[in-house]
Image (cartoon, rainbow, N blue to C red; front, side, top):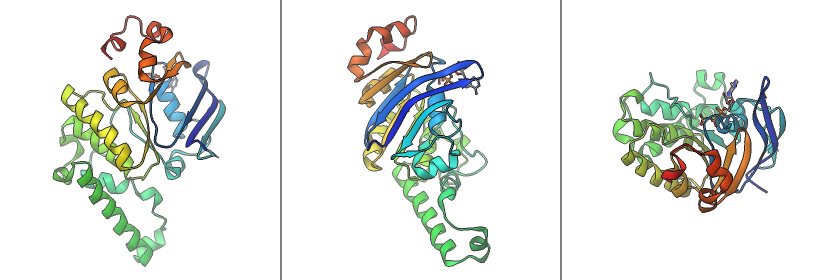
Length: 258
Ligand SMILES: Nc1ncnc2c1ncn2[C@@H]1O[C@H](COP(=O)(O)OP(=O)(O)OP(=O)(O)O)[C@@H](O)[C@H]1O
């Protein structure tokens, strides 16, 4: 069974067809890219998979179970986590708290447990702190535990956003333009980080990215959208040489920098 299977997914915003007949079969452990010119529908696909929108048509199956129509927190609980194009951290809370709070949706204790500090509450809270500590260490954020996210260099804010997604213990991690706004040095580190977290956390990674160097060096397979439709799907080498892809990117610098 595929980890994620999307069949004939279409989405309209009013009269605008943002995504049309989108299909994907993602196997466990894959590192998959989703690219396309501005406005092609990439973020809408992620938003549909994460439960921010319900598709107008089609099916989304995660480990064989339908997710279309589920709320975002329920999708996260099934094992799908994401980061955003514009970093969305809890900026008034320190790094450490960002890593704790993201875990609270799956704690499995109620208000009564919390008020009475039951054994269940104490055990689950201990786990939250253990996970946060581990992530600080693994993601190189230990030194910044008590800092507010806004005080971190940009590359580390991105790293924290990924760490926060990992705190939910996903099986599938969606990264929406993780290299946006990064300098070349930070991009090199990001490339290594993505490969490393896939191995370390036994993840499947699905990535939207405009930086072709990131896409072509990290992804094993790439799907290309243009005006909501898939125009190509193949290895990075195949995609670079695909006539329809080159046409879609005509006039843009992106593909020539791959
Ligand atoms: N909430 C919305 N309401 C109406 N139209 C939307 C909404 N979100 C996206 N769109 C439109 O849907 C289309 C696809 O947008 P989307 O953001 O998915 O593209 P994208 O490929 O992620 O673009 P970019 O690379 O610029 O981020 C665009 O025409 C966009 O204007």
